[in-house]
Image (cartoon, chains in turn orange, red):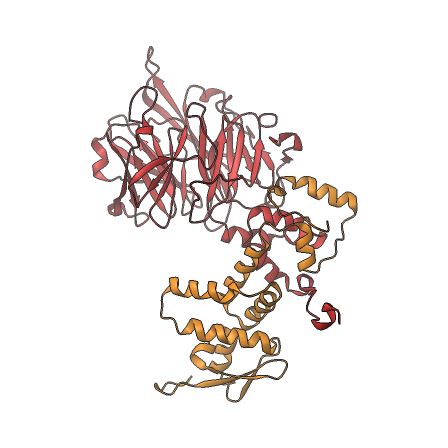
Length: 163
Length: 401
């Protein structure tokens, strides 16, 4: 790692759709995956990130820059994360959780998982199936049985429009 | 152009494509109700939500909520985070009516989403472990125990999990005593006997030597750091804490803040409050003092952490202020949720320094026994964790609605 101060080292990251991004090393090493590459001396040229597309990587880099600009104040970091995720739709959140997992960024992983969980609260069985693209493989009898077993959960849940 | 062609990601199949550890990471943050809804979504989600990995991940993130027990048989579990909506009314995540199955019971301990229940009709024989979220229970009564000679003794319980081996253990201490012939008051203890039941072993084991419990009856052990703790008053008016290490199965003793020693007896309770041992002392006229052991095991670290003024509502039918106040949860802003005399709940606001009646978890009439305890909900499966035990489900008959 560059030891000198004053001249921040910049890394170049490449998404799986061949977009290139410049990011300060100090921000990029929030990702343990990238930090390991830097520490192993593999970060000389371009760092290829095979599991992240350009749109998602751009968003992750915005987050990296934003969060690393905040001094050690957990409260402020939390409110930054909340604001950062507030306008993201479900599909974007899904891409980001995969990216955070691949990049090994626990703080982003925690925040996005929590945000998805928040979106899922009070949603119906049909909603979860639609959003997660899940096929219902229960037979009608099995479904009735599992719903009976959990009937206490259905109070206060948003009504289903297709189910 | 149809929207699906314009954006191929409109209908992502990512539940199936996401690695299960990420699915677990997300779903383990959901409230209990939403997790149950996910179980109904498809077979693989139901399977995933029953795996050890999911149960452990959920438990590691689960925050203490509350279990209430009204009139000994109506159990309700509440989830809440670091803020309470004082004006709202909380809906329980689950409700149980155990009158028809295990008979009206008292909660004698709570750890990792499991409850130790003791039917109040029989003093010694019956004990149950239940997971109210999974709606099932194990009967651990009397397995290899001969109880007949303990009649008329003082009985204390504890329930916890050992720190290294992760074994769930129920501890029962029975003290044989000599009572005053007319007042029935306990004069002295003649023998103290400790038995331990490790869940999954189907038997009670005798532990020797047993520490002395003092003159308290029906005391509930406070579980913290792999040990159970009981508040002990001897017959000479001095206090200590008896500690039982669930791993080593040995007893030790902590001393208490010296300020406590000249106070009226019977008005102090020991509980685990967050990460601390806490003594709630209600013996003052106007206020209730809460002492915390700031450094676990360091007897010099007992600190009078906060004091709440007694509400005028604390006056009981006899016109006395002197009643037991038990803290349930301290919030980040310093507010405290407490129960009063097993009849009502109160909320202390750190900002206004006032204590107000709290009805968000049900309106308690102040006459019918109501019990409340911190409860960390979990999906811990009795069947998978303790395969040797016979697990019974609460039938749908036991739904109160």
